[in-house]
Amino acid sequence: MHLKPYLGLVVASLLVLGANRAPAQAPPAASVARVPLAIGAGFSGYNPDYGNGHLLGGTLWIDYSPSWVPSLLRGVGLEAEAHDLHFGQSSSQPKNLRQDVASGGVFYSWPRYSAIRPYVNYQMGLGNQDYTVGPLAAPVRIHQSRTVTSVGGGVEFRASRRIWVRADYRYEFWPDFYFHGTRPVAQLNAQGFTIGALYHFSGPHLH
Picture 1 (cartoon, one colour):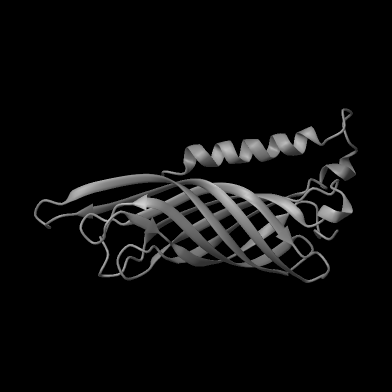
Picture 2 (picture 1 turned 90 degrees about the vertical axis):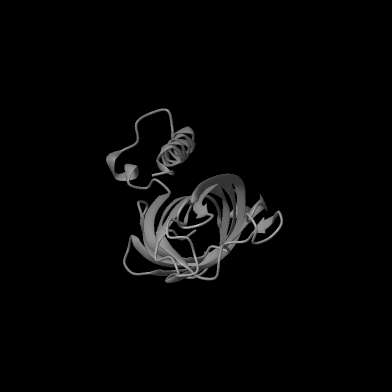
């Protein structure tokens, strides 16, 4: 799977950030569970902007919501996201069409409500796309990688003390993408929705 090397790096980076904020002495057992991290997964449906159709797959999230920031920045956090879209191709698309992205960035959430939390985010990372071109008798496999930026947002609903259900939208920018005869060099703009859930280790993420 294309994303495995990047997922390890993303997880390690967020854990280092959390460790840097920890006190030098070992915290009491009761405070260990207050790590401001959330980890979740969801099911994604995207328009990959390659051919007319859709592409399905899964998404992983890791959120870091620091409580030590000034009150003016409450609601700001760091987020890592990875998705792998590789099945459910439409008939107008190559059978092996696949998109995967691993990225990180910042988000801002409105923390004024106890059971609902809207948010927006901005991310940058590495995207890969695989597909075939040419006649069926002799197809040519193509692999492309790009620095992908994205903007998005969504809303979370509290299902329990630690679990929040998320509905997420994402719009991506893949620069200088070559469509091999279907268009000249152009920007690819994939977009899609994800429905999933996150587990918050610190309990209710209210500021």
